[in-house]
Image (cartoon, rainbow, N blue to C red):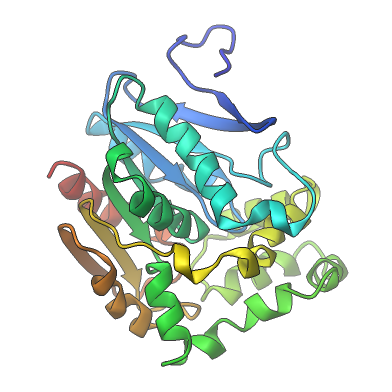
Length: 291
């Protein structure tokens, strides 16, 4: 844990695992129940800037890390370093730090952060009080939907990303105005202009482009046998205007949760749930966290 000058010493501004250092935005009441927020691609902890304050007002403390590949000091080379076991252990290190003393924490993930949350909650229910997934279904449900619905076609971009160097080359050919439109448009639009520009500029100018893409390139190293069901209280929020994720996967997720389960659909909302529907998600979250 790193302490910044003038910051409460109980704040977690960074943490280390395996020689990598991860930056953390630790905000809200310091004594509030901890909620760990895991961002997705191609975003950072800034993607929670609209939602987190709504949790703070209700007395919760939020810890939002910039994950592997996104934090400048946590960018290992090679796609094997981005397999799910590593991503989960990164998040678990923060969960255990935030829950020091035997306290369990609330876990919320969007996009890739949701995939990590599903895996972590399934493997370590002793460390997680509640789990919330935004957009992405349980990996087991996703795999089932991949071969039984349109999900295979909807996942076209995942196959493209597997080609070394090609996505990087294509993105660099676009001008600064086109990149935000492409990134937001692939996920169904709905992202604010400011948010899309923020994410595109970060991806292209921070050195995070290839490391962020390596989350997808590490997928072949994630064996299906590691998939586990989730026993902790779970909230799954899916949006019906998200072109990347099918309804079939969302509906199949129920089979992968053995604990209390709540499923909600956001009508007319695209992929960027934490920013497009912050107020609605906050209402769902606060009811879930209090159970």
